[in-house]
Length: 295
Image (tube, rainbow, N blue to C red; front, side, top):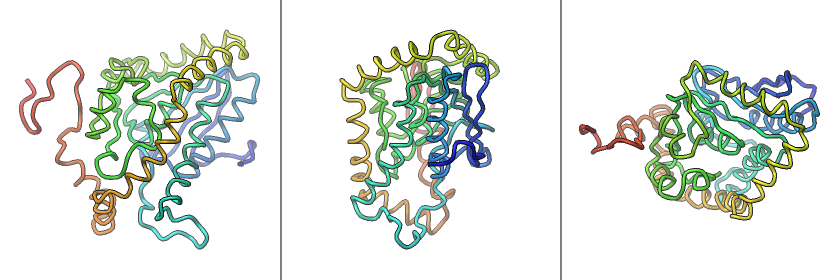
């Protein structure tokens, strides 16, 4: 566990006005998730939960995006001696579950959390956002899990609880994304607003939460989460880790890893996504055929 007094590297932690603001601070990579980021995030979340001056946590990203997913630069890199490789089934599950435990602090902490989403909220970024109690997005944000096209299944999966089975399948089976405005229409986000109103909208909710006794906030958050747990929400997260490890054995995953070694991660991602056009699903208008007219 990181010393709570230590300066963080991949996040920034600030407490003021009855709230803790946790900012992901790797803007050059669109806040791609590293192991250090998850470790620091978990530590900061429990620090906020222990601080009686804090009524809620705001999770946000610096730069052009909230979070673009996991940092893939180490894909295929030889691990240090004694480290788990992820190459056998149980190793893979163990590594996924380690990440999930750290993200689950957002769910398990007593204080409520708000995800302030702009730009890309993709793959692992959706894991972070959906573990929060409320998601407020910019209208032009982008929610999706394109990794499902060639890299496995979703290691955290609260999608069905937010948007129902049909939209969960539509987005997970194709890896397509929806805008922040459409995410709000189907329940992936609580609300979307224009980008220039996003911070005020989130801070306005935090202003209201700061007026409420933290013990009451905890009681009302936890009863709702317990209701979801009675519907299997947390059991499903454990199953999701096992299912992702299973999906990692698919031929398409081996082919993508081979491509990333031959051409580099960025080019491999480009080749994976190119056939999907703009990669957007639209809630209230036709999608049409790939490459065709949507009108």
